[in-house]
Structures are given as structure tokens and as C-alpha cells.
Image 1 (cartoon, rainbow, N blue to C red):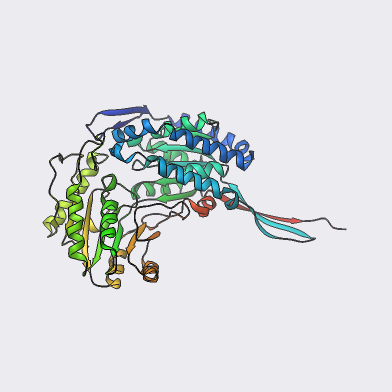
Image 2 (cartoon, one colour):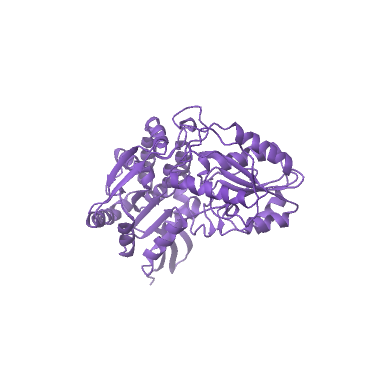
Length: 460
């Protein structure tokens, strides 16, 4: 029986798109086509692969006027923010620029007797499982370097953003990337797990939930298939007593509320030094009160609906539980809050780490703010989490930020900024956030394997 994948719009509950999932046989054939095409793709000159990938990126950009409202309908991000092409292009461009150096042979030595070097060679077939919250940017993080490195790619997108993979594949094919080299596939969970367990892929990159990551690891158990995982997050901000208060408030609250809080590295908890605490909270509430919640197709809307009603229900549950346990909700409920997908932004004080809103991933427009009196207290609280993706430190003292950052269990330390992915740095996490690393030189290392050459010369 064929499984139908259905994207339901959070705007009004209408059906945006439906697609049949591939049968087990059809999915196996798609993976086989990718494997058959990989050697010829890898044999092409590196610059040719770079040029084709970047042409595909530009072809996606040419669709941006269609993509922006389409994303709003699929997952609720307001059109006023203009989509994702800026970050999409920045990440692909950086990986193209560093490719030659990142993939260059590591020369160990050569003399009259031996030539020795280490070559980076593609894994083969890479499966990219992308999420709905930033569907273009998260996909390109792996798609671009995987193709440039000589892998073939199958892209499986989240049902909530069902049309993204189709657009990317159409754009890349129009630019000259062969269809077998980059394929968009519609797969259900069982078929995905079956293909992984049968070694249909040489590497899998998954961005999504902790539960989804565990399912990927179970499917790959015993296959020795490489897996890169970016899973949950509970990213903290820490505002020290010497911070630029206005900048800290503006950036951290934006980091907590942008995209309805549905950002991989969004700010989910804030710790503020007692000297700045009252002023920080006052300014934070003023910002949140000014947000306009509404239809994301309206150019005046700041915050649209969450991507699905069940996500909104989890956010409301965390807020209600916290308030029942003594937290204070400081932002007035907005009239557009319908009890379904449209959720008012909320700031909570009097919170503790006994509350789920300070420990479990919220992934919505809510943030708890706690008062701290020292770096030691802030570090302890920041580390009191099963997740570790990013942490945002606010201070005028670079060395202090480095000292504190060295003690925080996370993948990225920001100083005086938040909620940004620098493609020159490795995007990585620890603990339940997952393992592996994307972008940067390390991203290429994870999408290739080392192959050593120890060549003895014939001498007479």
C-alpha cells in the first residue's frame, strides 16, 4: 500500500501538497542509480563539479520570489524576512571557495625511494535527511560539499516542507548536474531505515529530533555506515555585568523569537547578571509585546504560526507547567493566538531548572530568564542540559568570554552575537545534540574518507 506524504499549512489547515512515498523497490533503484553514477561524477575535474553546483545554487536563487510565499504556506515563516537564499548562497559559496585546499592531498614526504601522501576520497552515496525549519539552508550545508567532493546525493526532505527537495533538484538539474547524481526522494520512515540497514548509502546526514537520530543509529547498527547528526538544542545566553545591555536584549530576544522560535540554534534560556537583570527583563518584555503575530503572508507580520499544531501544543504545555510551578508569564496574550498553531511570544521569569521549559527543547516562541551572580553559577546552569549546540556570551572582555567558553559544554561559542551559522567554522554539537560536523574544512573531512598512498619507487 502506497504511503501518501501530506503537507498541511499551519496558516489555515489547508493541504499545500501531497506526494506518494517511493515503494521499497523504487527507493532501492534510486539508490542504485546514484551508486552507478558516482564514479563518473567523481572523475570529473573538481572545478567542473564546483561550477555545476554553484550554477544549481544560482538557479535556486532565481526561484526566490516563488519560494518565499511557498515557505510561508508550508511552515509559517513570514514573507517579510525574504526566505533563505542569502544564507543558502553564503554557505555554498564558502564551501566552493575552500574546496581545492580542503580536498588537497596531504603530502607526507617524497625522496628518491618513496612518495607518501593522504588523499581525501568521496564516501560514495550520501543520504541527506533535511528538516523543515530552515529547509534550504540546512540541506545545502551537506548537499553542496557532498557533491563538490565527488559523492552522489539523495535528498529526503521533511513532509512539512515537501516541495523544497523538488525545487532544489529541478534547479540543479537545469544547471547541468545529472539527475542520477542529485536526486530528490520521497521516503517514509520504514523505507529510509531499511535502505540504511541494507548499506544503500555510504554516509547519512540527519538534522532533526533526538528520536529521529536514535532511529538512524539503530538502522545503521552493524553496517559501519558513517552518520552525522544535528539533533535537539536548548541554547543558552549569558549576559555578564559588563555587557552592552541594549545589544544583548535585542539580539537574544530576536534569537529566541525569530521564526516563531523554530531555529536550530535559537536562544531557549537566558541567564543575566543580577546587576542588569531588571533592566534586561523590562526591555525584553517591551520587544516581545511589540511583535505582530499573524498570517505570514502579510508583510507586517513579525511572527507567524508554528509549523504544526502539535509543536504549538508542546510550547503551551511547557508554559502552563512552568506557571503552575511558580513562573511568571510577562507578555500579554495576543488576540491572534488561536489556541492552535498561532502562539503568542512569551517571556518567563521566576523559572528554575526543575521546569521543563528550562531543560526540554521548546522550539517555540518562549524563553525563560534567570538571575545569576557569577560566572561559576552561569556555567553550572548552562551545562545543566542534555543538549549542547551553541551558547551566546555577552561581555566586553574577550579573554573572559574565552575562559567561560572553555567551560561550557557546547558545539559553538558566540560572543556578542547569537543564532548565526558561520560556514567557515565547523557546525557541530555534543551530548544529545549529536555528533559529527558540517561546513568548514571539517565538513569536507566528514564527507570524504582518507586514503593513504605509500609508493616505493624502482631504483637501480
